[in-house]
Length: 349
Ligand code: IPM
Ligand code: MN
Image (cartoon, rainbow, N blue to C red; front, side, top):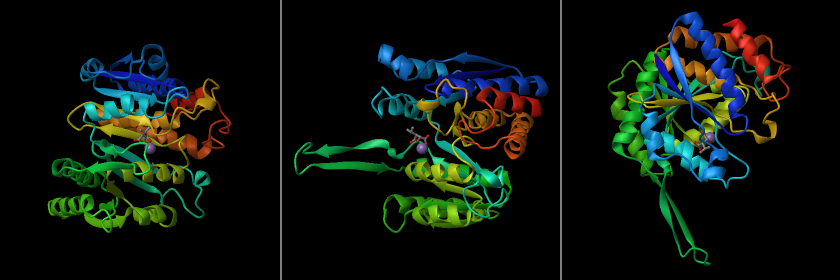
């Protein structure tokens, strides 16, 4: 019996989560697994009412769950930063979800903004470090508000933190067994402390994986190649900030935020799965947002729980629908409503 914590969150989060849960229910029927859910009301609404984001008590409760399914966090009436650090980053850090796994896969050439690229050209995975780097929030102001002000923002990289991420990426590349190639994406030519450590750890760990080809690309060149030669990539490992940036570009070349899913993974603990896109306030309540990203996140969650067949079936159904039914992956342009897209996935499972 899986215990799934559900955080619908803000904006269109609840709408896409509803479709994700619909698909999980149908998959449970077909593949014979059992689960129960509990809804957690973290988000902008609750914050505006109570001033609460996520506290240690919430974390303790979540630790008892098999996985977390998250919609979106972000509210137009809450100052940027509060919900992001108080909810999303708090969950990632407190549950030590040190991997952010973001597959970039094109399901339909028509939805790709790149000329001449097909589904076989765009199929790679970014392993983003999810617990350190610039996201650690270390730094300070000096002489704040004066002409001589200095703002310092530090990137914090520990040997252990880098090594567990790099090791996960090598293991993942081996298990994926597609190109058997792992690319380190960094900036060794400028950020000479952090990326010196990353490069050394990467080279060392690589010795344990002689069956995996290795490569290195600067982050700026990586963005160029995402557009020019995305077929060069199999698995990419990178730090928190670079991973954040390149996966938005990754989402675009796979067809947009409507289809991009990710997992915040603690291989020994509680992992959390989410569509990469935000809360999309302007589409809230209109039944027009694309739920496929949330449905893909649900599929990743089931796969991570060990329900490999269910995960695969969900992905296959999404491929079918994105490949043949939808006019577009963008909100309001799909040719179907949010609820209808969820129904279509269930029908094709
Ligand atoms: C993401 C988001 C978050 C991040 C924000 C909302 C804090 O952009 O999941 O990529 O920067 O990690
Ligand atoms: Mn991001």
